[in-house]
Length: 386
Image 1 (tube, one colour):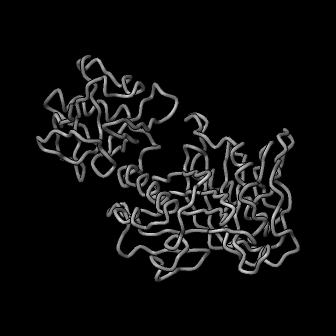
Image 2: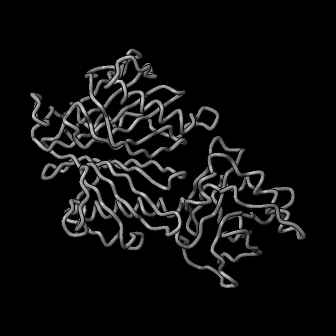
Image 3: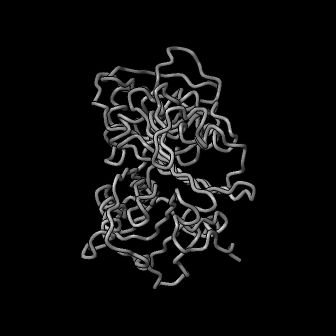
């Protein structure tokens, strides 16, 4: 019932290992990896794996145990799968051709056949650890216990909340002092180039509603969280309405984009920057999509019409400084944490969905030092959607 490395060889800092797995233990999508060079009664999986010597593994494998590299060109997109005994993630291109044995030849063939540009960063960033850190962050928020973060948290990790670095954050931040709460929606993106993720959380608990955006930064060498950068919004913040945010967010599609239609990192960031730059310079060409819907706090510009636009309420002339980016090309999304100039440089989170080079969705949350609504004459809350 266990998994055991069949063969391995050091290449740089990685151990490249073929793992033999009985077909009945493998998710259906994975069976397509069978090759004419591989015995039909076995499925062989290639990846960067910690060497387990000759010890069989008879327990579920987590990201801290192994990261299996998979990318199947017969599928429409890179496949990340989970099963009882393993998890598998994108394959890095760091593997050099190996020689001499059939096992080594198979490694080389699979490596060169499966590696793609989208997986380049995984050689430096362990996607399994990044996803684990993100899951543990969500668990810490929902349970009100930082203990969930402990296994992946660097000793010197920094924490920013609403634009301020909190030196004693493990005891005085909103994450450290949170009470257990149900999270009604969580949405995450993963940037393997920078080894970072962004997660937005919606909590509609009437006693303490909140909408939170957080960038998590993982040290690729240490595999530990080195920075947590959060915008935490609550009643009185800009157009805050957690129920409205949940209602509209659930109706949008932020799913995976087919490989052939994905925009580059540069194009995704350029679309976001153009939107933010137009607040300073009206002549900036913004790639407005049609339709495009903006969710600003709990207020929504979308009506489900082809004419829906995000080109509303742009106020000049203000800078949008201190931008921090997390980009996930697989879903066409960029998270930008920044200071929102037109609202007194308020701590802000903008998340953009880009499709075919055009802006499709924009989500914003803005923390107000002065409440309600940063001192502007808007209602403190919006009516819940019907």
